[in-house]
Amino acid sequence: MRTVVTGGAGFIGSHLVDALVARGDEVVVVDNLSSGKREFLNPGASFVEADIRDGIDATGAEVVFHLGAQADVQTSVRRPDYDADVNVVGTVRVAEAARVAGSRVVFTSTGGAIYGECEEPAREDSPLGPLSPYGIAKLCGEAYLLGWNRIYGSRHVVLRLGNVYGPRQDSSLEGGVVSIFLERHARGEGTTIFGDGRQERDFVQVDDVVAALLAAAGGPGAVFNVGTGHATSVLDLHRACRAVAGSAAEPQFEPARLGDLRRSVLDVSLAERELGWRATVSLDDGLLRTWDWVTATLPV
Image (cartoon, rainbow, N blue to C red; front, top):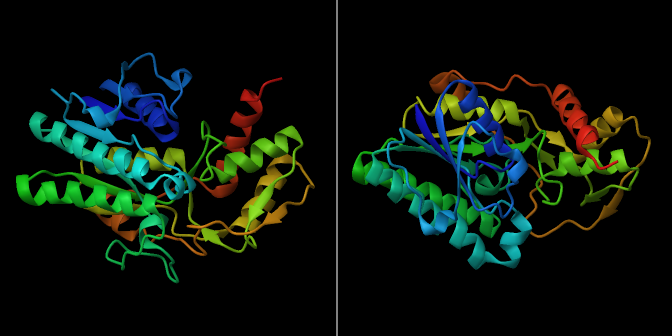
């Protein structure tokens, strides 16, 4: 199968490209390397250095996996116009390229940033209440792709991801809390928790997300949550990271940031029923895999 992966030099995208190449697909990576890294590029894939806002060439592709994005909530708060340009206009460009080529799009959206505060695990039909420009822009991207399904009979799929973590995650982005904690433990540096640490997230390992992306390519044109269905507090995450790193260091606390949620967890039963997918990597195992990568790649 011929596939295009936008953001294929990034954290999740590069893992997806590895899986696609391994199964024998002809893969084209489109990435402007603003956050993606050249060293993450799979040599078995073709690479086009380009910005999704300028459009892409999806000719011959059966599936376009659209992962290219501005993915930092705090950046969206500071620069909402830039966030919308990448995450809304860029997604429209991808949708139009796919329409011309007759391709289906599998789009990585966000769970927590779209649903807002979640007393119970959010279902795909739960009320939507984004609390950041990032969440608003991702919801707009969803609306365009689902609108294209209605208008043009496309079969685009939206995956609302939980808090993804794993090897290759960028510790410079606030969403990469696992990488931040583990990298600082490895360096013997202090860690910081914003807020009281009791805020909860649905942490899902990147290999599980890749499996969901592959399953979605053959699924119905709909919206699916991708997470574990389990909430983990940031304090508990820090303790687990500290245990993996063999560290006794306690975190320092800073005030909560604008746009941060108290609780975000996803109901993933629809993906299990419709796609035959569920997360299989435990948090402890996922943290160990990430720790092995962090310690192997840190500069000596």
